[in-house]
Structure formats: C-alpha cells, structure tokens
Image 1 (cartoon, rainbow, N blue to C red):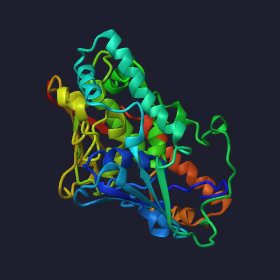
Image 2 (image 1 turned 180 degrees about the vertical axis):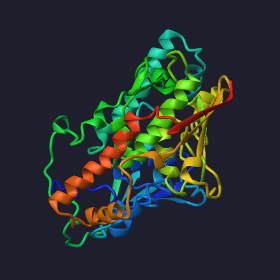
Image 3 (image 1 turned 60 degrees about the vertical axis):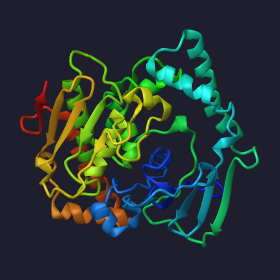
Image 4 (image 1 turned 30 degrees about the vertical axis):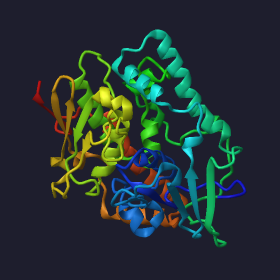
Amino acid sequence: YPNGEIPVRGQIAVEAPGAEDEWFVGVFGEVITFVTGAAPKTGFIGAEFGQANDLFVRQNKMVYLDAPSGKQPPQMEWIFTRLDNGAKVGVNFNLAVITPVATPERQEMGKKMAAGTATEEEAVDYYEYWNARAKFVFENADTLEGFFNVKVYQEGTATTADAIVEESESIAAEDFAWDQAYITEVPPILMNEPYFGIFGQTSGPVPYYYEEAVKLAGHSCGATTGAWTITKKALEVLYPDGEIPVRGQIAVEAPGAEDEWFVGVFGDIITFITGASPHTGFNGSEFGQVNPLFVRQNKMVYSEEPTGQLPPMREWIFTRLDTGKKVGVKFNLVIILPIPTPARTEMGKKMALGQATPEEAADYQKYWNDRAIFVLENADLDGFFTVTVYEE
C-alpha cells in the first residue's frame, strides 16, 4: 500500500515460513494476524458477508506449513499478498543482528528471573538488556543493512478499492474514535502477566480492553461480546473475591474444532485475555523450562474433529492450573435480540457489497450493534450464560 494508501484488513493473505508450532513462527503469526486480519483456521468464515464479498472472509488467509521447515530463523521469509491487485512481497528478519547479544549467560539469567531467584541487581540488569533488544529493532528497522530484507515478487496491477472500502485519509492515532460508544465503555478485565514482570515492563495488573478484542476480531457483535463475557464469568469463579487472574495459569478446552462454526473466533478472544494459546503460542523458551507459567502453547485445546453440537450446547471449560479448579460456561446466543431474520441476512450481503442505501445501512448498523449491546446488558439473564463448577 504505497504512497500513503491505507491498508485494508481482509485484503491481505500471508504465507508463514514454517509450521505454527515451529520455533516462534506462531508467535510472529499471531501479531501479524492481529494487524492484517489474515487469520488461520480460527478466523471468521465471513458468514453472509463473506458469501457476497471475500474481503469479509478471514479464515485461512494466514497459512502455516503442515510440517516444520527446518530453516534457520534469518532464512524464514514471510510472504504477504495483496488480494485485490496481486502484489506480493516477502520479508526476512535477521534477528541474529539484534544487540545486546543473547548469550548463554543471559539465557541462564532468564531462567533465574522466571524462577524468582535473581537478585535485585541482576533483575535490573536483565530488564535493561531485554528491553534494549526490543528497542534496537524499532530504532534500526529502516537503516541497518541486512536486518529486514524486503523482496518484491509481484508488482500490483492498477485497481480500484472494493466498493465497501471508502476513501479515507490518514489520521493521527489520538484523533481516532469509534462510531459506537459502547465499544469503549465495557469495563476492562484486569490480568497479571508474569512476562511483563520479569522483563521490567510493569509489575502490576494490566487492563485488557474490549475494544482491543474488537480490533482482533475485526468487528463487534453478539458473538464477540459473548466470548468476552464467557471469559469474564469463568475468571470470576476461578479467581473469586477480587483476586487478579494470571495469564499462563489458565488452560481452556474449546467445544469444537478451530474451524467449526465460530469456535475459533471465540477462542481467539479467550486467548487474547487469558494467554491460553493453541499451537501458535509461545513455547516458553528458557523461561518455560523452569516455570510452566511461562508456557502458553497448547493451553487452548480445540477438538481435532468438529463436534456438531448446537451453539447453545457448546461449553467452554476453564481450568486454573495452580489450584485445579475447573469451570464450564455455556452461552445461549439464540436469546439475543433483535432476532436475525432471513431479511437481515440478505441485508448483510447488501452491506458487504456496498449496495445498501444510507437508510438501510443506518438501520442495519443499529440492529447489529444492538445485538452486541444486548449481550453486555443482559449477561445475568437466566439461561443466557450457564456457569457450572466441575472442580473446586
């Protein structure tokens, strides 16, 4: 997207340079998915919107290899394709260049940090080392030769944007505001993140905001507010009396395959809050070798095959790993109002094609966001969210 053109989420496909659980490929992929909307199997299938316009399909636009590539990290190339004009570019990241250098001694100190046995002086030194490496990447990304290698494989053809994508100008981030106020009015979920602590980034609870989950999903709806509320209710049981939940201390069993119905979309939001990741999660490296709190990979487990369950029967199981407490949460989304009628579904297709009149668009947007708000305002409605404690 040269010359200041604004990139479009859903218009980008990404080929990963390895399997999702190989090295840190999945961790890189999760960040790239968050930005571009190019999701693996967990992504939104698009429903009626994707039937009318591929821009709204997010599933399988991030493709991982079926087996490990065995490549060294500096040779791993991420391939990005712009789907409207065919432009294709590859990017290599030579992280071996980063300084300060990651020595065996530093790795051993990482273990001490994760185990909580580092002295105060050692901790301060480690904080400086770790964050200096992160800052080095940003400060040298455009100037250091051989650090990021960009190769253009296909020049884009002249094209016009999809009708649904309006012409827009860049704005300063601080000037951005949602058109729907409720997105920023949802109370945050406070979480303790052990990684923030050992890297000297913050020692206190961190607020996770609903609007961040909306960015991840690419929209707000009754399902995204449902996934948020499922997680909130589970955490309130696992960590009662105001105790702050701990990311990495929670395992989650999903009620279906990652590409079944909207299971993966729910799962992505639950992962975002809890840190319980599927195969793409961080394997913990030296930190996870001494403390499982720092292992995130495979703490979100999807079924290998579709379960075929009706959505109201799907139960998300959350386990607190330090105490063994286990809770299940079901979400009866058929209760949500306004009801989605066939006419509403057809209007969704018109919206995706950019064919709705201004009046139709305003009516549809109200209907859609009213469904999301209904979940937030009626979360305690009898039979809406069912919470079952399986293990104290």
